[in-house]
Image (cartoon, rainbow, N blue to C red; front, top):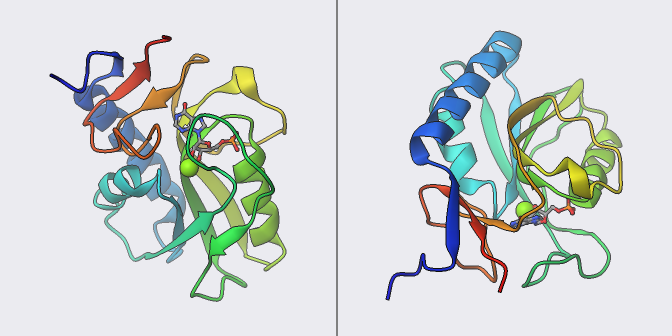
Length: 176
Ligand code: IMP
Ligand code: MG
């Protein structure tokens, strides 16, 4: 049985590629000579980040952080924490955070506050998908791939119960 029976494709890999190229062009314009530190939020950003940075033809460094709280399933569970942190000093650095999706905004807003306390020279946010209808905390997104409807999305790094991250397109789970 195909694993895709309960999925509706929203953005094809071609559409994603076009969006990632557009974002890479914007980021290149802004960070050309800045040797930025690109910080991916695990696990959801890993494919997006991998595709994006390969289109950035200037010096940069890459780090990953991992946040707690998002357990298995669809909703927030518990208090946010950085469970796998930075190995670089970000003071005075130009920092660009990469995330898969901004939903309520809690995760990204927590991480941006955490990073700001470390006094970077600049701090910006690049997200693949934004679900503004669900927002609880104001978040300013500097580079955006897609605005998405209030559906649960999987694929291209996004998971449901750790599954579907490997899909090449972005899909919505069909409501049962
Ligand atoms: P927020 O803190 O509510 O903005 O949620 C952000 C995190 O929740 C993301 O990094 C995802 O890990 C997870 N998340 C939120 N919405 C979705 C979705 O539609 N599909 C998969 N993961 C999601
Ligand atoms: Mg995530």
